Length: 450
Image (cartoon, rainbow, N blue to C red; front, side, top):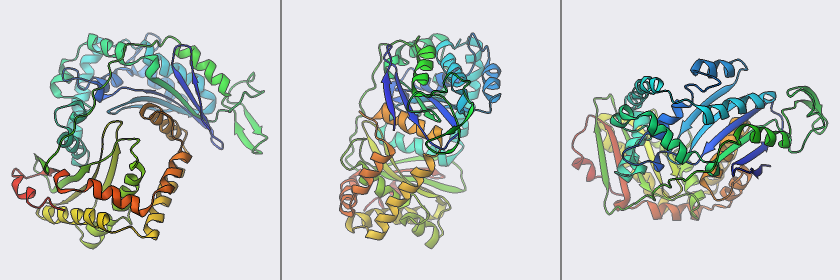
């Protein structure tokens, strides 16, 4: 069970003890991302994430940071999304002190060296090129651009080439001072940490002991109070800031929409979907199950129809995306260029079918068990547990534990799923993004009918 503690500087510490693991993960999750940007600084959230790895006063360059963490066999990385940015270190449980030391040093003492900024511009441009050259990745950005247009929700998280090349040191300092405040930052520590202080805390952290409750060998990573003490030690300098809030997403659609990205490819890559629900909507969990039934497994309807029966795709999947103020469901696939219209027809037929006919009990139970099983596998990892709680803390009013999540999933009925499908699958709400050798969207517009 997790514990939340608000420290004196308004930073919130989330501690999640786990049994049966020798690791602990320290994740710093900040409630900011590309939706908090404007046209002028679009892409700075992601660029700033890179700059935190470029050196501090204590660890002067990338090598000093990475070699110290590599020296303990740690996994470490960072990620930038639309509504949050995260930085994590996963290591042997007795190394929590070092993990917090390094992560806090990166976030609080980075130099943002002008020469490093100029050098990193080339790295990020190549990252942008990599995404653009990979249709399976780029189709997701293209679909969101189609849905949301010229507003932060519709911009690429990585930013534009022009912005990337134009950023200066003062841009990073200004954004950091505004968006990295203690009140919108969460430190999540998950793994081999005790829910209560251990009598062995005076001994060296990482000492091998016998856990009397489990009667199995256990590596003591420290108690909750020790974690709190370390968090205060390393993050006390982080102060509240004057945050710039994100603008609410504006959505309006009265007819089907199509966006083509011309590219000479061997396949046509498509994303065909609809606007749906934000986090917290009453049909959020029905939509998740709808997505699973349609295309999140090898036994799903679209996998069977498009791949197994028609042989039209190697990769086919559905995705239900939930933001705090918007959401969508879409099906993505790579299909033969001359069979694109056929593939579109099959996807639309499955959308119509699930809206008009209830899923049977066996299919619904399988979908629920799939979510339960995958979650159990994921939650064996301390980094995944930290990430789950960090995202919940940032995106929801309260943390929804995996157990709470499954309770809500289990309450969903076939009628709930059908109702959600009827609400979102409408002709006027269809959206089709395509990457391939196509320039004329008119011929696709005629077949966008459910």
